[in-house]
Every structure is written in structure tokens, then in C-alpha cells.
View 1 (tube, rainbow, N blue to C red):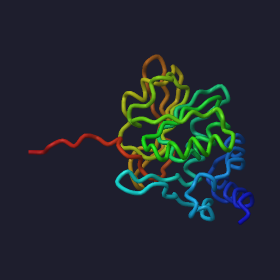
View 2 (view 1 turned 120 degrees about the vertical axis):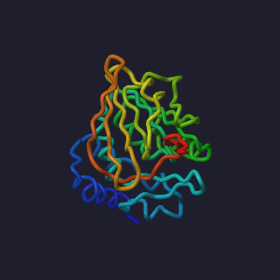
View 3 (view 1 turned 180 degrees about the horizontal axis):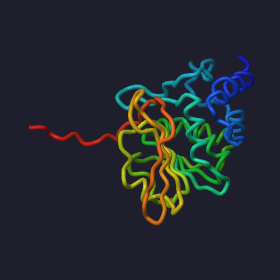
View 4 (view 1 turned 90 degrees about the horizontal axis):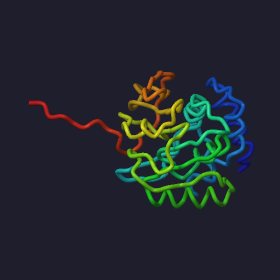
Length: 219
């Protein structure tokens, strides 16, 4: 299979057609070999317009489909001077994209098998401004805070306060809130200790484990 041709087709047919105009984002998607970040049996399906399962079980994980991923990265307006925290890096595909957009990336992953895979692939392909770390996704990674951008790589129901506290003044957090067709992409900006939010576009992406509201008892 000609993966380079498939990559160009993905950008032209799935990403450009959904209002992604950022040159740096388009260039990153044209550069990063998506087929290197999927299970071996899925390589020929790497460029389909769909989520791709990376890990099964109760903590099921997915590689986000190209269009919403590109729109979220565009929404973050990442620059080469930014330090980025990625929440839920999976096998490292979005980490590689972020590495081309930002100055440095901390890629947080709770699944140790996925974290190991991400480290190996990113190192092999030369994305050397990414550090993959293992830990609880909901807690973020305070050791390297504050961050200019926090990117949550999957849908969530709530965003923990701990993540907002790890943003630099003027920093942005991008996330998809809600599940299924009712979810919205949102941009949060932290200024002078306060956080404002703006809903941007409707989308439907697979959820990250955790990030749920506590269930209350009804009597």
C-alpha cells in the first residue's frame, strides 16, 4: 500500500474539507506516518475516516479519527514556543503531531503498555522533543507545569480542577466535553487565575477512561 498517497488523500478529503486551514496543522498531518501508530493488523486501515481501536477491555482506547483531531489542534493555536501537556497519548500519534507544532511535549499515558509503545515509536521516528510519562490522566503532570497548552486526547464528562491549575497564565486547554453526538469541542483560556470557556464545534469522539462526574444517590 502507498501510505504517502493515503496520507495526502486523508488531508485533502477528510481534513481540508472540514474547515481546517492552519498551514502548520495541515503540514503536520502530511508529515506524520499514521500507519506507524496503529496495531500491525490495522496498518492498511490507518487512514480511514474513523477511530481505530488501540486497546480493548474496560479501559478501551482509540486513535481519534483525523478530522476532529485536526480541528482540535487548530483550535489550540499552538506555536513553536509552547510547552504542551497531552492527556492520554495512546500510541503517540497526536504526540508526534504536537511535536511538530510545539516547542516541547509531555505526553501523559495511564496504560503502561501504550506508554511503552508510544516511547518506542516516537524515539524510532525521531520525535525527540516528546517525553512520554506514565500516570493518572485526571491528575495531569504537575512536575513539568505550568503548560502553555493542555490537550485532552478523547471525550470527557468533566475536566478536573487540577488540570486548569497546571496552565500558565494565558494558557489554553482544549477538550471535547460530553459523549456521542451531544459532545462539543471547547477552548478554555486561563487569565489572572480565572478560566473562561468557549464552545466551538460539535463532534463525536471516543471517551477517555475516567473524567466522570460522581454519581449522587437519589432518595
